[in-house]
Length: 285
Length: 267
Image 1: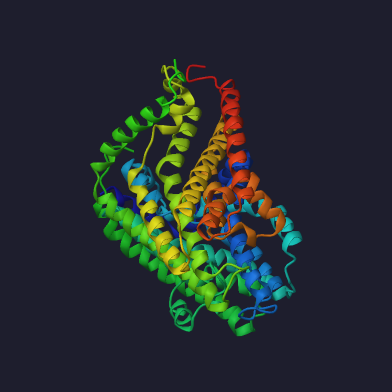
Image 2 (image 1 turned 90 degrees about the vertical axis):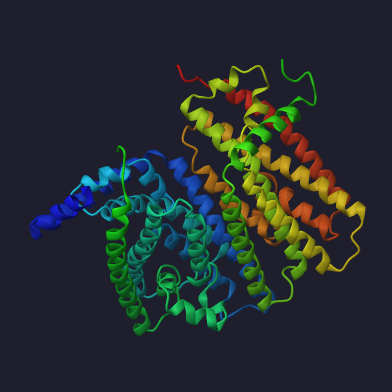
């Protein structure tokens, strides 16, 4: 019942007021996230170095292969791999989302009760808080990118339009990625053994998003599979938008695909939420 | 007082192991869950190897079965870390942050031993099983004669590697006495540990040295894998032994030094 009250109130607020409410919420959450995270710079750097290990490993492995194969593999030279995986590090930070593992605690500890009482759909809190954190992370990422650039000498020549599309696409990637994991996280309303489901999804994403290797290095069937899934719009596409010299149709078509997946995601979240929230009962919050 | 009986740490570890095992045996379905997750992880590793060897026949002189051996050692060591090392260190970090380390320090046993053996996640040991299977498959594929000497060298190098990783984790965790919030360190370690999936010799010099002496992935994974693939020289094994001993001594000193910074729950 609580949930219904929360949603209904949302519906009765006049439209202009609602949008102002969203803007207020996002600005406030940005501030909270920024203040929170600049206090813990060491923790954030630990976390970023841990995360940067992954692309550096891929980069070393694939540039070694490229060198052994006479300078390139699958159309990528070591310098192009370097560019791919350095941009990867920013894209990865950008598409961090509220972890699906977080739902279990949220439900078990009754945190969700408090979220339901607020007059906004709970996903906004997650999106806003992490978006604010990303603003801090982007600043912290700059020196890391500089060091990686010195170490691995990437081949980069980008047009202004690539940069513009990239700047939009990384936020698009964040939203595309948020929805499926929110839906998946809601599986915690039904079962506590969610680990295997999440891991299947993470694995599919690793292989079919361009996170592990540029998709052009994958077998044909895998590339075709990736075309019909949302994953590549969260990893491969933003990276290639910046460094891949994509023709305009693909460059802007990608943004349209991101929009499509965001819309599908939002519909999915709304539908699953409707059923999931009926399963929720809390003792306290 | 602690330290008088040399076997005391092992007796204590055994007791904690039994209690931990009994605790986790209540949740048997977790075994199936862990098996499933370990299988997916190993499958992903195999897919990556297939991708790499779809493009080349060797990676810096390492053939496919040799890299499979590296992967097996990596999974096996990962299982050891997840079963015993990491759970204890995470609990220690929590205890330092919350001040509940008092309960350990007031016990009449060596505190370093206690904080190192209190927790055990037996289902994570499924990774040890998976790692062992991968190693056996790799050794069979290598088609070399694998004698008892080689097996012993591997076992010895593996134990040294485990000790080195334990020391490394404890050194980092003791940092929590100064830097209170250390929760991100788990992700830092897990991220860096992934580099052990490949022999450290493929990395550029600065990274190879970091992965040997700064984060001892080389001693934990590459050196035992060298023992499996007939690459291990006596010099390397001696270096690994010396390094492990030096690190153990340093860790002991560092732990005591860190304790002087601890102010307890009541402070």
